[in-house]
Length: 206
Image (cartoon, rainbow, N blue to C red; front, side, top):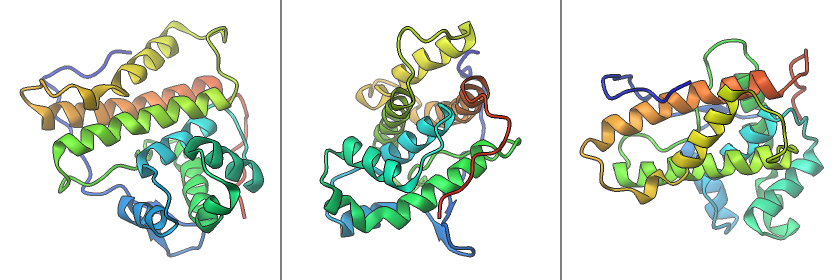
């Protein structure tokens, strides 16, 4: 699997919307950012969502307590500090499970919309990949885990994308960003299909 070439131009959605645990409620990147800010947590919504997706793709079926503990570890925060966002976490996790295991091409990483400066969106994209790789590691993936060549290449690519925000030398950052997001969407579903051996959709949390 190769990253898209420079001749690929695919539209990036105006916003990446995630459904909350309560029917009819929706969260966007800004909603998660605001929840983190209200809890006084210095955290990236993109990295948080990436971590949840990494856990899901690695085959974990997280219970609320485990989910809470993983976020504490990711953010290097105390349990009481993370508690105010527990419901937000459940919403993100449940909808991400649904997207990744939908059997279609519904998955979208939680990233800022295109009104955000491209430099910041590239940083957030890198943070998403960092969180994703962290989540896979928490699922037991190591350097010794046997992987197909395609999956090994994908993980290598995601590690490279995690550093993309540090490279400001692109002549066409908007096009590069769009291509990277589209590649990420495909890569996540490919990894999930390879690593998650469960035959049934993971249960949602309540």
